[in-house]
Image (cartoon, rainbow, N blue to C red; front, side):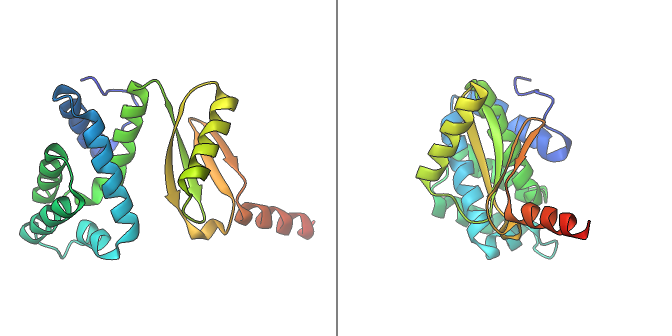
Length: 184
């Protein structure tokens, strides 16, 4: 398998590997990556879609119908739409975040990039993402693909993970450090 990088673990990693290999084999890597980006954004914005993918109360039939409607609405490529249908039929839609993360890492590695997992308190604009990618590229000496997630619990700032390195400039961490320093 072409996607074996050692970073994909568990069930989500196996599905991501299968999708990556299919995408490479059918020369649809960019289309699938674009479609998965749309799915990730939709999952972040829609509580209903998140519930559809994670609730054990949703039947296979209802999940498949819902996912087919989402795929059509988001104008996903055929391979990704069919893949999502397979996930729904196998009750594996809850694995989508892990699948998207691993697929993104495989695609970045194929392009010679490294992936930086970025957690922000608020969504980053395209300009902010471009500036962050440029700073990371300057510091790391390689092209960097950003995998951005939003977590309001960090209050402000960013947490950036690249491989085993982590840069935590979140307001939550700073406040916790200040609290520890005040305790003595």
